[in-house]
Image 1: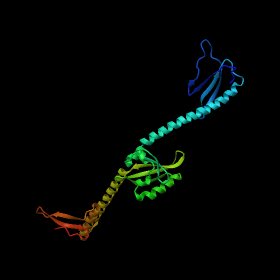
Image 2: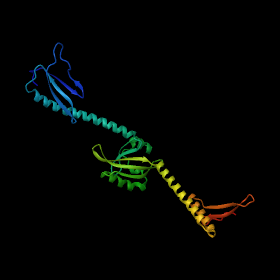
Image 3: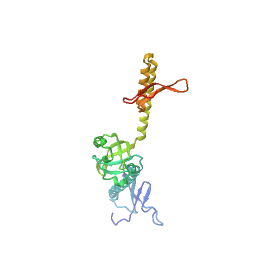
Image 4: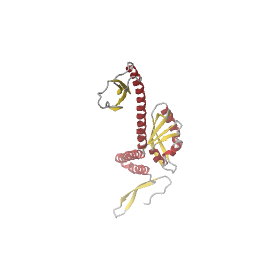
Length: 277
């Protein structure tokens, strides 16, 4: 503005004022021109010019100044929100229980969280530049490459693979790969979850179901076998039992009435000698 009119400027943002708040001692508050500023789609700020006499073109100039200030404030707020968002992302990234790796479609690691470093028993910083595929069993490489390509095309891909560390320790994992923009370029983010306990539980459930099926089969075979077929039924049942527990031979011993036992039935793998009577 001109030097014609001594003015003071004041900005209010989110309820806080910046600039002179009270008139000089002995004077009443001067009249003000006020311009509301819209930030991120909301009227969050205003700028005011106050003085005993405002220039005739003050309202037009104030509108222009308000637009410039709004743009500057919005840029500053956006940078602050972005910085806060990046900070929160990094905290979540590093504190996640799963191993998280950001990498290219060929598997070269761009970033990794602390969980990945713990999984692989390496410093997190040392993971950058290495290839994720080098930590997977060779038999999983082709499936992993295919899932990375699927993820880059926008389809979330879930697959199982075995991580193998340099010290030989291996760990089955379920890996979720998705497309992500990282530092201005397209990348893939893969999160791995240790499923060793889940696979062990699944194996145990399958073992128990198989055992129940075997016991039911033995029971049905013996109950429904005629007398002349009982010898074969018992022998076949012993063979089923050996196959289930991984033993090469088994026998049924009966009390002989004199405090001893006698061998009544037996099954043995081919090539093994019979059990002693």
